[in-house]
Image (tube, rainbow, N blue to C red; front, top):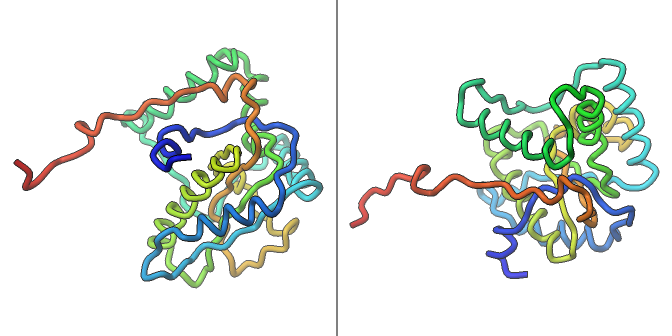
Length: 224
């Protein structure tokens, strides 16, 4: 797939086929993705790849915690959107589009809860990549570098017919990931990437998101 086509067509996938992704494919994706730029070639990213029985057990424990009312929490700063900001409006617009496709109405609390759980279950993906960094690093620059390698993972996955969803719900109970995958406290858990073969029959996977015009986002200085 052409790189420009990949950038333009990549989307978040929120349901996957019940088909395992071969380990060798994920390995190749990670090898390609690690060509991402990083500050002075520090390459701060590390990965935990989870599948099959281990992933099923993590999903079970996380959903149990969620249903018990245990507040989700993460090891990094979670983005907040001020109520009247354009960022909040964009987030709400996305939610409305998804709920419309999924036929979830505002008053249907049960359906909304089920949708929430879907994110904490990695959208039923057969494999998940957890991105970590070493705690000896300051948060700023590694997070920027992590964004670059994460984008590369998502674009490289398209070459193999795979879909992805970058989701912080997957790391909102980090203690579960630590215990299940033996992740030491010296590593900070940053983000989850759900990976699998897209289920294109799933309504939410048909969503087409919009982007702001470059004219509203860009100032040009020194051009005629």
